[in-house]
Length: 472
Image (tube, rainbow, N blue to C red; front, side, top):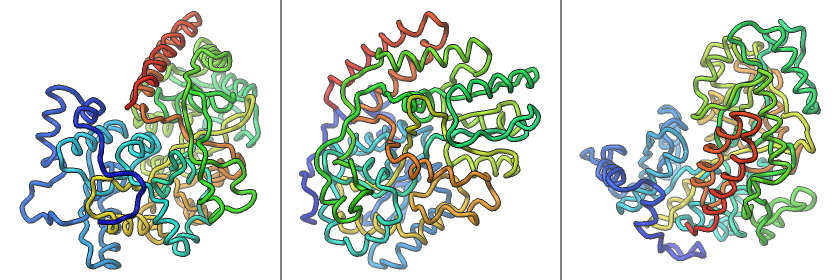
């Protein structure tokens, strides 16, 4: 058993896991069906293999083979079983992983997005600090290629729990055919909120029946949160944990680490603050004027179709849309991307992902080798050929990568970090599931009418306070 990792291996109770993952008969059914979900009941499976769980839609079968086969070629002594867990979104994926842990059949390594970084770090993950220190020379090239904001988002209370593999910042996509029809051009990078309003107004005047100038989805990433960020606010008070100097001094000396700490803390709810109210009232005004849709729930998969066919002019999305729009048949010149407009500031939000080592694993050394392998340049090139996300490595964003898929403004994806060093992760404390539920539930209500904003935000505040008072 490895001696690395500062926390003990005792995990949360089965009751706590099931409270997060599901309840009652649904949880029992999920536990009972886990072997079928993962294929663990197939005869001939190697029970001694290193088990790596990923969200089913995040890595396609060809990329999975490249990830597994390449690793086993490098480490023939380590057998790997990749499990693509089918889930509707990240919270659903985390629920299934947590239920598996409660059932006593935990994977060794889990692909975890920002939504779950602190959830897993708090009770389930192994801090990577000692291993990173030991293998610093091997990892130096990786950290030199990855923005410190991404690394800090994978830290919790001074320790690093994941190595960033990918990220997506919420930028503004524009249908260039729609813009040209209205006699407009792609806005410059440092445009203002009032410029955005004027753009939507002109698109509305030029658009026909069934056209929506601005369309967005109601979720934690890319919903109302980017507007909160550019208005220099958030639904939870944000600060940084102390610590982290061991990492910043070793890999990001000087200006690159200025202001960095030991990871983000999201604490006191502030949904009723003046700046939050201001954001919701602005979005309500856009809806009342017919300039944008009321936000819809879900992942926004249907948005690709309506955007690519010109029924939507502008929408927030990340680098993953370069691949998505290409698959939908949209020409690379049919759209472009720029930054979110400036309000009080122009800070952006992002979400990232990387592999986490679980405390329940009895193969921590093998798992660490896999985690290091996952961030090698050639491995990430094999994984992200279709531009279905934004690679964490800056060097991978180049003209050749976007030659086929576009957009022309592909530099925007990484420049969102480089041009705005204060850009940070979506608010995702260990109570992230309850936080997201409160946000999406009351956002839908708040934007129903001008008079609904303040009552809905008061209700959101109450739910957030209850969530943050409960220890996970």
